[in-house]
Structure formats: structure tokens, C-alpha cells
Image 1: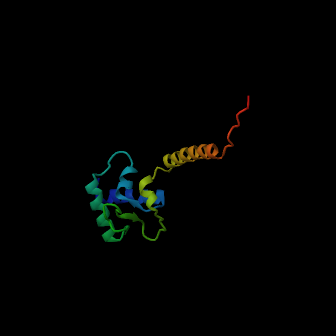
Image 2: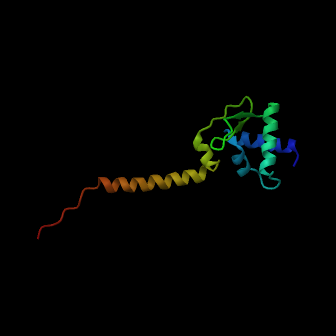
Image 3: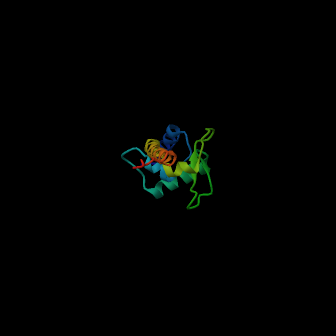
Length: 119
């Protein structure tokens, strides 16, 4: 895949998700067929940011990787986004499970103790 085609795919992913995305997030959401190697995508993103086609955010460290967005587009970011990738449905299901278990535990804690009958 050529740089121009890869850049167009990156731009489309950023438009679809409307959020800042890391290189890892972009790779996870890359359309089937023609997924670039991690190093290749890194080079494309570096070149696109240098040319002004993308905005690069963050320090680019191991624990806070670069995030990319489109110029002139409001693209929110939260550290939680990196953990979620962009699989919001999976995260929502996980959150529902946690809240459901939490509610059961709360009911257990607030339940009145049962009284024993005296014989």
C-alpha cells in the first residue's frame, strides 16, 4: 500500500471515530486487507504530521503514545480511550456486568438480617 492510500485510510478512520487515535488504535481498526506493518504506519504518521495533514498530540512516550487527529476537527481524548481502543460495545458490556455485580453486592450489604425464631 502506498503512502497516499495509507494516509487516506488513516484520515477516514479518524473521521469515522471522531476521536484522537494512537497508532495502535488505528491498526486495530484498520480495514481488512492491506494492513501496514507497525513500523510502516509509524513512518506514514510521522510524515503526515510533519506535512500538516495530521495533528500529533502528546509526548510520544511508551506510556503516553502520540495521538493523531485531523486538522481543524475537534477530537476529544481521554486516557480511558487508549484502554478501550475503539471497541465501545465491548466496554459497555463490561461496564454493565460490573454495575450489575455492584448492585447485587449493594443489596446484600443493605439487606436486613433475617431474624431467627425462638423455640
